Image (cartoon, rainbow, N blue to C red; front, side):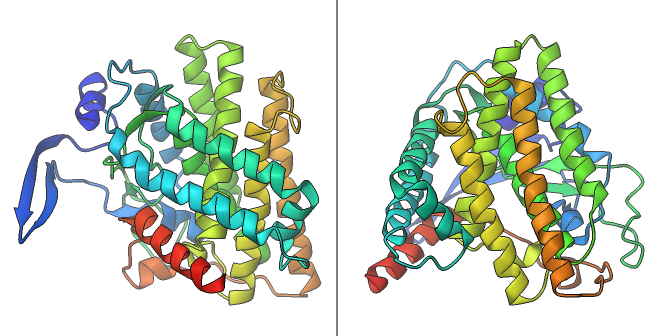
Length: 369
């Protein structure tokens, strides 16, 4: 339904036209079969960030589509609301586990040290506010799973020449089954978290990947310029930006740090450096979530330009730290190479991720306790 709404409103939007959706039942199992037009994009966009060379034509198209989606009026605030339960259950578990980990006398890493420094009561309140935001905010229709591995692009024509891209700049946004009416910043936050992680990862290899910087800046600049043109006030734009920062932090802390998902997709291969990136995502994610939800940390009256500066400076601080790590190891710059995802023809999938991971984490916690 939401795919059809976007296609009807903007026929050139970067998604395939849905044709039919059927209920299927076999041997007591139920599913839905979605039939769409064939996608001309066949490679996950996230691979480009892993490789450190990002097609500059993609971000403006994504921004335009998000503006189309986020400015649609929805008469059904409970649209697809049933998908929320698995995520809320996961968030409640993360909050509980974070509170338990905060009781350690000696922190294991920077993330645990940050929680101890700030106080577990503050972090738990931030996580509570985040849960409330997801459960109760009804800003607009959102994709709700808008990360760079749910975006398909043209395959690169050459593995050896990673800076080369397909001729058309094709982009297709897929996996719309989580769509809801929800917090407006969640989609942008999902689209930024992994790229920021890749900035850190590549800096650990000795590179500042400017095409990733360009993607982040272009996506934000195009989106907020078009939202302003659509009639959003400066105060509304500041609210969106702040909400976006919180949801960027959500992906970083929940998905990358807590659930340890996709740690091999940040451009670093050794376990030591993957753990470094994971810990960075934990610290930065919590800082972003505090910025969004803790008004004693950053005042509610903070304007758009100051929020932009805070966001940029927090990222830059971690990039500088990663560069210092590279220099301290006296490492040689690692040559850019094709992503192991491309080489192994493997795709990243988050099907059932929230439910299965929550079950697994719950079992681990019960064993540890």
